[in-house]
Length: 337
Image (cartoon, rainbow, N blue to C red; front, side, top):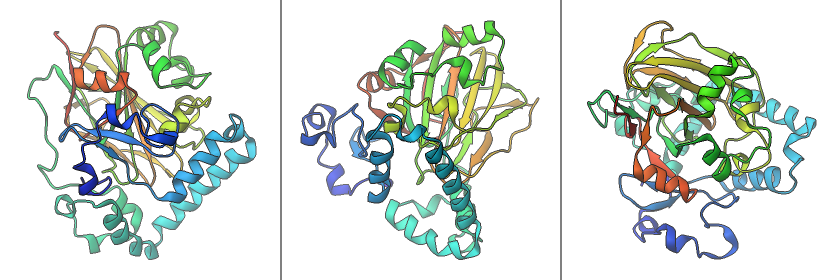
């Protein structure tokens, strides 16, 4: 139950049908609120994501009080300044004292962390920690199966229109804007006709991300932008978070899935997106692609038309606006080619 509420609460089996009837909307699936429910694929149980109360309150104020609050220039400057300041704070040696309380609050599994806890010089280096070999593994040896690139909460949509209808409510979101209008029209159209998977990383997650399909990796393109939170409330507001936040995109020319796009998106309090992969090289599923510095963040993986069929349980949950908790290497879908 590591990242969520107590084991006792988890054992109550709050399934979607029951949770949707809880009063005041705090635990209602698919609504905009500070409380986030996800389903752990491994256990099948629905759990509340652990989050400090002050963060919940901040999200409610910023993204619920007014549709225009978060788009205010002063607010944008504040979010940027907060991200820079937080990055400086967590690279200071004194931030080491934050590590153990963070582990305790989120109930992280120390046994899977590669380096000893007392070896980290600051909190940020702990945040993008490496894991021991074997801590994550491929869910299928079949190269036609795409896998999760991150420990994350996942939503999948067979079509872009379904994603916009059910989840992405930003009134300016388009595939063209996502890529900063840098792609030729025919390539934009190919992704508009395709499928989308969204992988949201919470601060407590393992923050290195990996390759979801086998193939040749392109050079990355970096785009400067805002530092809005990637919390579901923001995604389901009028903001175009994915099209405005700082981001970096690459492509994988794969044998089985066509040309797959990977978009790494920074968020509130995220200082940087660091790629550790080698452009132009052949990459395999589970190879490391990079890591995020402190904060929440998101990875979008876009498939062109008829190149993937997502796993049924992920599609079913996404239709209910319920994120599914996955780990690196868990299967997300397959193709027949």
